[in-house]
Length: 87
Image (cartoon, rainbow, N blue to C red; front, top):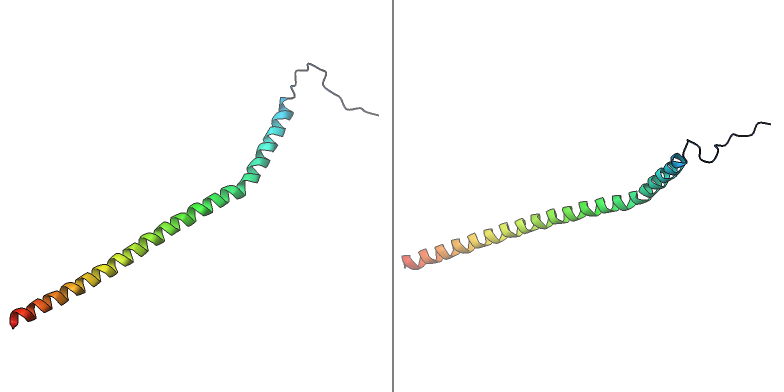
């Protein structure tokens, strides 16, 4: 029967490689667990940006509507003034 060889205490091969591998696995696991959070954060950022774009577009539509209304009121006032001057 062959028994596995073990490194003697104080061996030149440190256990750091095993600890490092475990830390690496833990970090990878932690990163994997944080992926949904990162995706949710990115999704929320996109939705906020889309909402801001929509608000700007709505303000532009409202401003154009008010400008047209003001132009119509100005034309009515000019017509009324012209009618008053002609009489």
